[in-house]
Length: 238
Image (tube, rainbow, N blue to C red; front, side):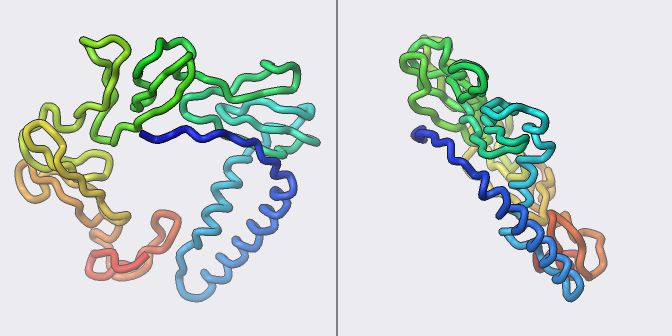
């Protein structure tokens, strides 16, 4: 069971200026690398790009200073810019004005109207107590959360992918899933340059096969925000 940690709203106004500077440096570095031999975007650059996307559109533009909701993210607006932000947990939602004008906070969503016990919420088993989420279990991709038909306020993760399949290997979410006795007994995730292809090795025998370099001559190609090296129609580097 994964435990729920407390949340802290940490201001990052000064961090935003540093973010912009780092972002410019990262882009300059990428352009320099491309001028020579192909290079893969660094992890730090990808992190900066992801952070920039969080603030894309500037939800604070034209808004008074204070806290507000943007989807299920609590943001602090200051001077028409985002000063800090906090993403609500999956079992929460963002609501404005609960503590007065200019306020917003993450509040309980999954258990707000549930009796004590175990319930399903977004393919997770959520334990509710006193109208609050106190614990949860995330179902693996080959399972789903299902309410118990016999016991009240009880739910669990149950088989989903293999529940109606004959023994064999099948594709599910870029994984090869091995089914036996209507249950998942093994899972293999395909590589970044691969895809899962059903019946690749025969009937009910799926396998991970080359995708990025299939049918391509040897060389370098842009894939997955990076550069893939192909040789003999197989990915040899990224």
